[in-house]
Image 1 (cartoon, chains in turn yellow, brown):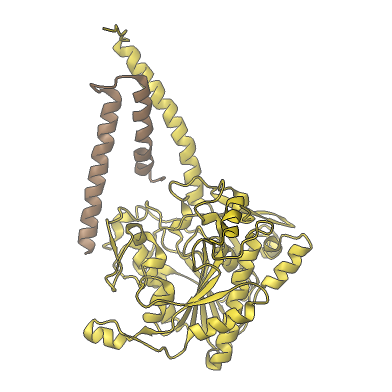
Image 2 (image 1 turned 90 degrees about the vertical axis):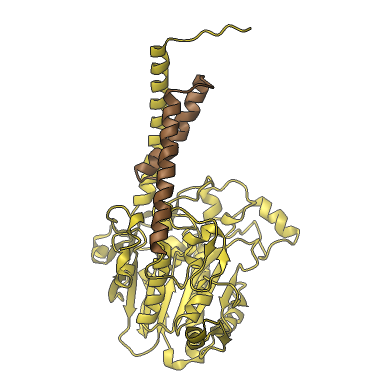
Length: 435
Length: 57
């Protein structure tokens, strides 16, 4: 029988306290990083075309003071025309979406109609890293005047703001069962509920913006893995819910829309083929909770979702570094592409750089505006912002085109136009659901 | 529905709180695995609960 030497109780207690202190110090270092990410403030030098700023809480008051409240920027030309809503950052870990929204906001000029831009529609999700995945919290953009820093974020609403998840998420009002974590996925919770979970309330706020502001065309900007079929794609509905029939019978019947956004998407996609590949797909009527389905079903707006290729969120890449996010070069994905298993003609030499993905969104959105105006002149919107070709030209000259179009928030000349995409929430959010 | 959501949430908080207390208790006093390696393990496991209480992660 082995003899064991037991240390005295006081020594044991001292060793436990030392261990606890060391672990707490390590925890404090991690906590400081988490806290900084949560409270990091992004600044945007908004164009002089800005006419109004509202918040989600102006449409759903119970969001006020929560991390789901987020600003919405209005650019009204004052000239009669249509209204377009552009949604950035629904999935914060697809940052070219927010980047494109920021570049639009900083450089936009509107000569007809109105443009509404929400750069971070799931603000909460942008304030955390992706759980379980070791990846950088920020990416940087170089400009002539310095370096800008932006959050990468997660796909879902932060669990600090909505927790726990159910075993099965049931989308409202379709009743469709979906993956449990999608209860915190903004692009699975449309059309949302005014008294639902925080994410459902944010989704409801988006629908309220579309309905109350009489939006004619709504564009949702995303990014997708290249192992996912719907990458590099416009998604738009060919049919929409007959709301009157649904309200009378509870039965979901789909009819041809008054204005067909799939036609717009297909023409835009074909016209863009000289610049970059952009497929078009019809939104399935049997898959609920997504913007391209529910925005069209629960409002009168034409809706289009855009996907760019983002290899950073493919599951088989090498280390997830900042370079992988901003340059998108990965040998594993090249091998998979060479084997014909991806849905995008990936070339590791070029990668999927941030400028390329951002430029695609900028020109992809402009192209839909152009074609929507041609199909339906009564809702025409005329706006300009940087384009894919302009950015490509700058990149060919060795200039970081994203940084080129970002303005310096520290320049005194820009002082009146600086907006901080941050609002200090008040108190604990989670038990505010019933308010 | 909202009432049920809040009720489930409170139940989860109570469960999480009890687990956290159990970990703290086991860190200082336990019958088995009375080795310093397990002290580290218990201290490490307490961190997520602490960060949650502090509303950091």
